Length: 273
Image (cartoon, rainbow, N blue to C red; front, side, top):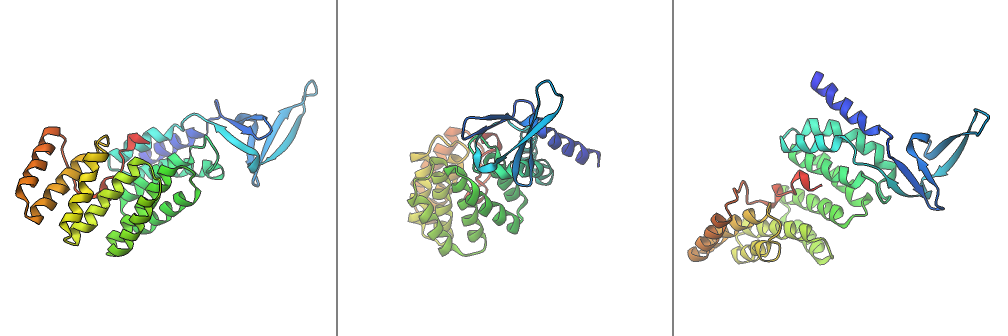
């Protein structure tokens, strides 16, 4: 109980108002220390010069064009807990921060997309399908960041794979890859596409998908070893031992340990957020 209380106290510290500002469309800048969110509007309380009284002004959320906000203190702890495979504890940290930024999800400078992406990773670690789906759909609907939207769509595609609906998953991947998505999302999509082809014993298609990772997306060190191992297995299943050995040698040359050949667990490392 003390541990949980400590986590909640850390999360509560993210509401510190030091250095936090709202920038409005007409150029006004509101200090968060003088502003509260009340009934869906921002209420700014200012001291009246000389009189000791105060005056309140209200602003619609639509008037906010940017948040100038330092990183919430709980994010680092949530990343650490995710890396330590403690998803339940990480969620305790993330949920109150996510709630704080929810009204500003689509506003420039908001931490909501970053927090929502991390929450999705945490839920994927927990394996609770209903919560993963809900979080992914929310991220896809509210985020304006292409990589975040792509990650959400990939998460939904992975759920279709787990449910045995491979054809639907392939159609979803085709949609993802046909869009100008960021390279990190494209790489994971090809890895997942290879997994689907491999499960369907379409080994040539699997090899083609897997090898796109080291050829076109070699900068993603957390994906390349998994792709090389998966490609090696696909070549062996296809009967091409020589090419399989070549990939095994390439993987050994990189000297990076591989835990999995599946895109389902090949999510970006927590520190990338």
